[in-house]
Length: 294
Image (cartoon, rainbow, N blue to C red; front, side):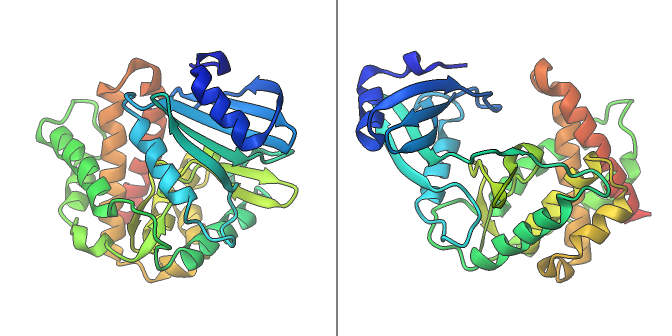
């Protein structure tokens, strides 16, 4: 985890030039990329800064977020990217700060659910067609998941549950069914959704891609299950988003399988620090696959 002082002086000077005198710096919890994440109290207001050395493995995600931030329409409820730089070997992103924000609650009956589903619908409408962000197609992202899924199914571990359901759902995958003109966030979950006095805000666009609008909602379904909703409840919530009603049934089932099998793979082979969380995600996804194939 990096601190403000880890940022080279040249880069800190560039940030100061962008936002004015910095009165106070407060470190914030970082995500999986372990980059610099700080709140800045500046003469132009409170700002959120994230940065990462450009030779870090996750730097490409920051670069992608930089591309997206420069093109998001005002109608998208997300903190604005105020300035970005590639300075002294660091990728730096300066955003509006979301004041009085808290993490979203996706559990059954949560009062946050309506606002989140409204946001998913707004994203599909405002980001179709893609406003110009140079992001890869969703098929490329799903192909990455598919390779891990197939590796697991080729030699399934003895503790892999629902292997037959997984195999059946996997056979339904046709990547072309996922293609489309919409800019997708593709990683909506509690950590990337903030409840604020002015509504739900979405952050962290590092995994964004382009595809069919319904894919956004489909990728969100296992997150709803992970939060405690049953597969039936999660599907019912998803169907409140108009784009999801047009989703091809077989494509959704196939996507549920590769999404879940990837988590099954990481739960067994990923870095030890994230295996438990990926096992929980895999269990949620597995329940969804079993529901869709039963």
